[in-house]
Image 1: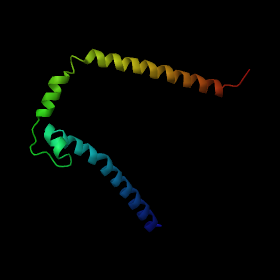
Image 2 (image 1 turned 180 degrees about the vertical axis):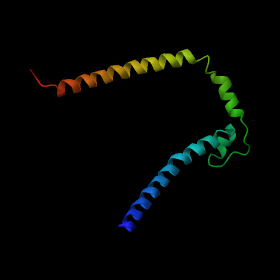
Image 3 (image 1 turned 120 degrees about the vertical axis):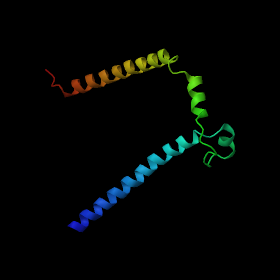
Length: 103
């Protein structure tokens, strides 16, 4: 019984370990690639960056200006949330009608 439990636990842990590597590895790769220059991205896409300079993050922050774009983002989230609420209300009403006995 102990051997079977040990085997099942080992298999589950192995699967979870593989899954976590599959999830974390692309995130780390994407983060490291963010430090590359444009020429490095196009010439050596699979290599690590030659230098870890935060210039790309500074450029992205200066060009995007999240505070200036806040009203647009807020409006988009508001519209999507209202649409989601409408869809969920219809599903809830359909489920309620299906579950209620007919009088």
